[in-house]
Image 1: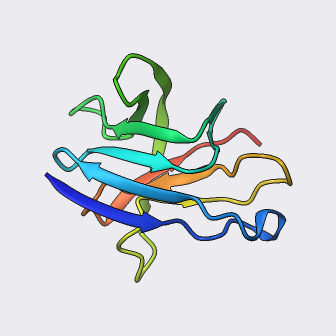
Image 2: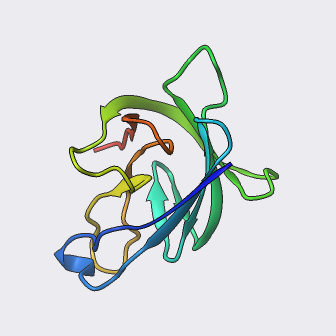
Length: 126
């Protein structure tokens, strides 16, 4: 089992100064435990600070991502994603965040399984 820690960049001018830390534990290459020190959002749900499991629940459809509670007792998100490439030079961060209005949780734009160059971009309604 590999352990990696990384800190997420400050997200947008509206929440400048807020740093969300994420650490990832990899069990296999497509299941990670991510810990957020602040609230973050996924399509249709806001995740409170805490640890969550990000995983690919199917070997046949690599575009479906599932996000569960740390103990796997609750599914917070399960949906389609789009393939994305990790930004050049950014090998440590397991997620990228988007900008949010003041007081709102920043959206998780993409999840990159630990050690993977390609990731999963979350699809938000406009």
